[in-house]
Amino acid sequence: MNIHEHQAKALLVRFGAPVAQGHPAFTVDEARKAAEQLPGPLWVVKSQIHAGGRGKGKFKELGPDAKGGVRLAKSVDEVVAHAKEMLGNTLVTHQTGPDGKQVNRLYIEDGADISRELYLSLLVNRESGQVSFVVSTEGGMDIESVADETPEKIHTIDIDPLTGVTDDDANAIADALELGEQARVDMLDLARSLYEAFTAKDMSMLEINPLIVMDNGRLRVLDAKLSFDGNALFRHEDVRELRDMSEEDDKEIEASKYDLAYIALDGNIGCMVNGAGLAMATMDIIKLYGGEPANFLDVGGGASKEKVTAAFKIITADKNVQGILVNIFGGIMRCDVIAEGVVAAVKEVGLKVPLVVRLEGTNVDKGKKILNESGLDITSADDLDDAAKKITDAVKKG
Image 1 (cartoon, one colour):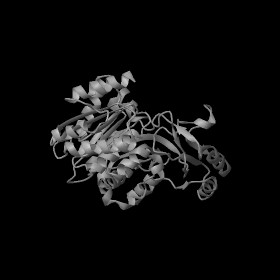
Image 2 (cartoon, rainbow, N blue to C red):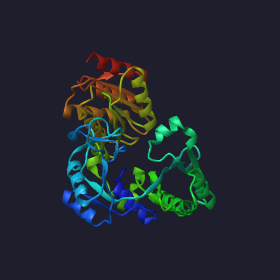
Image 3 (cartoon, helix red, strand yellow):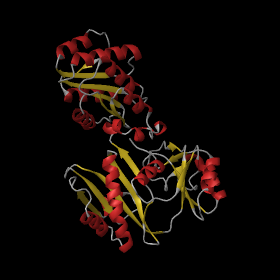
Image 4 (cartoon, rainbow, N blue to C red):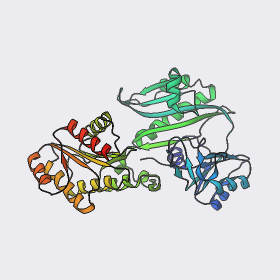
């Protein structure tokens, strides 16, 4: 689960991170009031959407010459003018895709005198099995570009979970960021507070880009992006309350109601699979045969008929889907349950695109019999390779 920048900063402040004073605003009047509560003489007006690249983004409605989604203002009136242009309009960045995202809230923040921009993030390092700091002196840039062009400027510091952040760890981070005396002292506290926040709130990513060194030598969190492990949200009611469903895909929201692992993609072949690994393999083999998956959908190992029916409805609700592949290897999941769910869903919502079903495992014969006797236009497949060929061919034929 992702949250907005202003929410992320409010959370990090609770753990002692240094951030500028700021206030969220949902209307132009609230933007004015927020600016009037800040000292100035410089304000920053920030669009709040779940996507990066806001500063370089463009508003669809304002034309190519308009300013982006993060703007400086030198007066309260200028803050208001920016708010009028930004609220309710669609911001397109390299992370939103061409459709962009509508800006429904702003963050009005006190300006800062920036001496240097740095990059810092925390994530779970699967290679070391530890939480790692990833840092670079190249702040304010896309870290992917830095990794491609100057990988030597990215440094990773693993943190031993038994000790937490030690003085040696904090100094290693400070060395990698080439910090001066005051900023180095600040890093001793900041690294510990960020690590505590990351572990205490079950985050999957904490990214600060940029982390700035101000003219006075002090560190400040200028931007913050937090993602949380969805499987741990039951422990964090305060985090769950920060969820903004307007930023999420409608199909993903519906899937979450049935505890389905669903991620919308850009392709045209809908996939229903049990098991994350099998789902990834299914998407890979679809691409191998020239198709494009429209989603990742894992119904899990213990799916009920109702859950399968809901999953099928979510797939068919995607207007881009031109064919559907159901790929089930029944272990805990029974093939007959999958078949009953598919048949029930097709009878309820109809079937306007080709449907290929591959079943294997527990109760596979019962499952195939249910499909064969349903009277529906369902194509059976012998194995995953056969299924991928059949659905990609059917979609290509139109």
